[in-house]
Length: 441
Image (cartoon, rainbow, N blue to C red; front, side, top):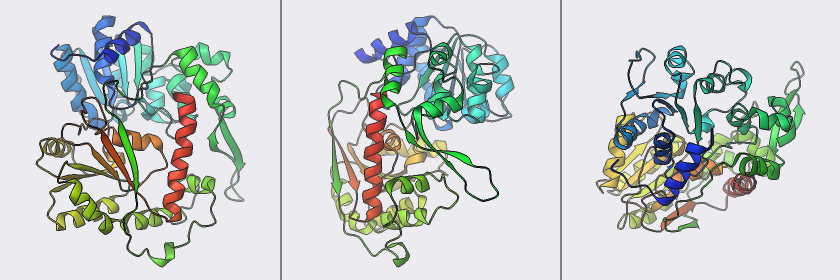
């Protein structure tokens, strides 16, 4: 074991090894991966399986080999054949819930099940939930019934509302949730979410729509007093993060977007942004238009930042990322993009070039950056070019830079404006962060 763990990693590993199926909900960048592998060693397990997003497979394989010296097989395709004798299997969620489900279920029958980015196991009807947690989150037929211990790792267990927790927890703690009378999904929703019965079309049956989270103090009690989840905000040795709101000069926004959201409440706006209604009301268009209007006005500022440090820029829509790439390249900066279509190997190459100072800027599509890209070695500057209503999305993206190993104060700049959409999204994000913090922190 060549790596030396931080004190918090040693402490967390001991808690996980001794704590049954103890979830680790610490934020990204706090060292969960090595804490978990140390817990595996302390608990004396001989076998393990890691289910993770596809982007994190190679990271897990490398860390397992480096830290434990264990043999690992990575499953990448449905046609891959499981070999015998390996200590660890690493596989993506989609294959584990799809074409490789039966093979993995048969191959894994002891040891530790590690759920990386465990928030991927959310939803009462998803294939991932059924494969991992079993039918109706009872464990029957799921990977959890094959494991001696299950460790759920995520800094963002609540993506939308409290109902996201049902599938992540009920299968692991059935006795606890039976005491609260919320083993069934519908009962969980009734107790921990705001709902409204809506009828979207005269010929359709009324549908229960979740509008928000409620009873956050009870969720907090369950997580921290009953279960005792690990929840670290940042590693103790990290320097501070400084946030600032920047207002670059904007170009004209197409007239059809000028006043589109003026009469929408924040609740209506959030429902549309979450695509919970049938019509998008053109918000994807206005969201992109407002962000693109700030591109040219931001170029000079970004160029100045790059004189001191490489810069990570976060976008949500591919069109916005393409606009930044074009304008920043024009002024002579070395720019790379990471977005949904970027192959895994190319992502690794871009991250390495960023960390060794060979490029000035990564324009990263936030939902494509994953959890395995570590950019703290050379940079301490993050710019959010498109604010997002989900605080967890931003936390995960910023943690590409603000994470274990960072030695400088990290500066996070939000490229905002006085446009009502920018103001509304920031307002929604802050409100949701407060609600989630009440439940989780």
